Structures are given as C-alpha cells and as structure tokens.
Image (cartoon, rainbow, N blue to C red; front, top):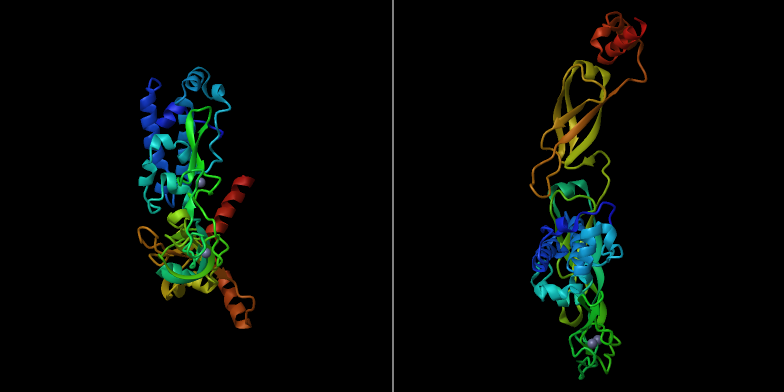
Length: 378
Ligand SMILES: [Zn+2]
Ligand SMILES: [Zn+2]
C-alpha cells in the first residue's frame, strides 16, 4: 500500500490487548468519521486514504489468525492482506456492510444515499466555468448550459412500454443486490444483481421512445452562484444536477470546476494580487506619488526617495477576499526602475554634473560590492 505503514493498532486507536468487539467498534467509528461522504472539499483525499488504511487494519485485526501473525511478525507477517488503496470507497463500505448494518443510510451530504442504495445513485457530472479576476473578487453568478441523460418522459425512467410496467426481478427478488461470501468467508460481500443490474426490476415490453433504457438526452440550463475568492481548480457542487439514479435512487451532482482567465496586469498569489510597476529613475531617486492599477481602478502609492529596483510595496486589503473568512488579501506592487534609452544634450549635461557629486557609499549594492573587494584584496 504505502511506503511507510502505520501500526494497525495505532491506526484503529486500540490497545494491543483490545478485544474483537473493541476493534470492531473502533473501526466502525473511524470508518464513519473518514467516510468520503462526510469529508467534502479540503481534506477529502486525506480522509479517503485514512478510510482505506482503517479498512486494511480492520481486515487483519478482525481475523484471529492474521492478527496472531501480525503480532508476531508485523506487516511482513500479513503480506498478501488485501490492498484497499485502489478500491472504490463505496465498494469497501458495502464489503463491510454487515458491520454497518445499514447505518450507511444515515450518512449525510448525498441526500441520504448511503449504504445499500449507494451504488444506484446517479452519476456525477463535471463542467468548467471560466472567471475573470474581477469576478473572483466580487463573486458572481454563471449560467451553465449542458446536456445530460435524464429520465425518459414517456416511461418516467422505467424503460417499460406505455401501459405495461416492469416486473420484479426473479433473481434478486427486487433487492437489486445479492450477497456473496468474500475473503474466505470473513465478510458478506454485497454486489449488484447481474440479472437486473441493480434495478430490482426487469422490463418485458420496452418503451419505444427510449428503447428501454429509461433515459433521454436533455438540455439543462442552471445558474450557479460562485462565491468570491475561489481558486483555480476548486469545484462548486450543485446537488441533484447529475444523472438520475437507478430505481428512483437520488440523482448525482454537478461539479463546476473553476478556471481563471489570465489577467494582463495581475498575477495571483494565494489571496494577494501581484503587479509590476515601471517608474523612472528620477522617481526612484526623489520619491513621489504614483498611480497604481487595482482591480477597481487606481490607488495612489507614495514612493519614498531612494527606492531600489525590485522593491515591493503593499496596498493593504486591495487583493482578493478569502473564500471562507472573507478577509481581504493585499496587492503587492513591485517597482521596476527604468533607465531612459535616449537623453537630450541638456539632460546629459545635468547628469554629468550630478555624476561629479556622486557618493558611492550612498548606493546600497555598490557599497556592499566595494566592501567585498576590500576583503578579497586585504
Ligand atoms: Zn422510455
Ligand atoms: Zn435482480
């Protein structure tokens, strides 16, 4: 599984002397805690890893023989234990269905589609919305048009011809799922019924409109509210806008992934905006007020005399809002000191006069450079 494996007892948070019951209770508590349905957004990937780690630990510690081997030889002793890392979480959850005893149905976040009915929940759909930085700053509403497989109007999704209705599947008795012994009889494995593909019913006379699939392609237009401060790659979930579920199970969700258009002036660094501002070398020397672009217009910025090339100034609160706390980031302005490519005779004369009065010790870089030379030649 992973390179560094944690101790199974530590994973389940139990003592090495824990009874089978304690192990079961602890696993149940942790599996519910790390179940992906309860861990949306940030930390979801981490939770899934933990969820699988717990399943692996439980598989070993719940089996007396494997537990003894593990106690004696550690992870080496139970090589060939099941690798859960590439398994779908829903499958792991239903694999241990016995332990949860239908508790899965109480998991929130997906319209109660947990436990046994999970597998029949409709597919999630994905789409992308593109925002400008100004839209990120203020938050916005976007209208999304897309096509999805929806329930057929003619048969209401049953796939049965008008006037007829589907019959109860003889193989699973309408359950949609059948139980099999898995893992050497340790667990009851619940899988979708192959005869009705989990629907619990079979159609004899097919609906002519959809050919018995129960589905038709439909155009959807939905409006999605995008909160201010979102980041590239984040997703806004619109519950229920995915594909319909089998057998009246809840539909999936639509996930709108955020893409942000590049801005000609600003780049983004977390919640801060960064821009570069060219100033003349006389402005850098003498200081003064300059107008700095912001997302909403311009702001005056005081440049002190003796400003160096590359120095960064901060316009407090002129960045982007944090998506959660709404606290404003800053705008960071980096000044680029420009040297004129052309000078008039008069300017050259003035600069020569200036050069005659120059004091090398007032130049931070050159002073440092001369100090180093001194060190080298002493
Ligand atoms: Zn139909
Ligand atoms: Zn069936």
